[in-house]
Each structure stands twice: as structure tokens, then as C-alpha cells.
Image 1 (cartoon, rainbow, N blue to C red):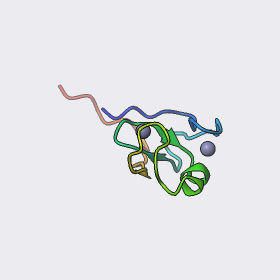
Image 2 (image 1 turned 90 degrees about the vertical axis):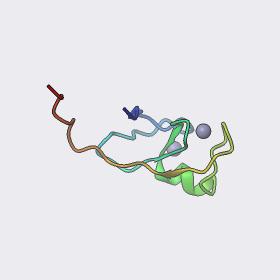
Image 3 (image 1 turned 45 degrees about the horizontal axis):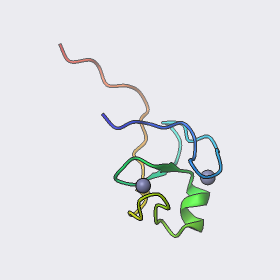
Length: 63
Ligand SMILES: [Zn+2]
Ligand SMILES: [Zn+2]
């Protein structure tokens, strides 16, 4: 399952699972402001940052 990191890796702003954030394919997580400043390029791995899907609740555990 996608790891929902709770803070921007650049500025430390909160990026709760229910809020807006951008991630790269390695799950580096940044707030929308930092993603914009960095032109949606991850500074760690040079990958594209894309809007992270929000998670309003955890899915029910499969039986
Ligand atoms: Zn940030
Ligand atoms: Zn990255």
C-alpha cells in the first residue's frame, strides 16, 4: 500500500493523507507549494512529482 507520509520532505509542512500533496514514484512527499517551486521535479531522484491520491479512510481489511 502507498505510504502516506505526513510531512513535506522539503519544508516540513503537514501533508495529511486527507490533504493535498505531491509524490514521486519513490514516494518522496512534498507539499503543493514546494512541488510548484520545484516545477514538479523530485530533488531526490529527479522523477516527476504527481498529485497524491487522497485517502479519506482506510479500506476495510479483506477477509
Ligand atoms: Zn513543502
Ligand atoms: Zn523522489
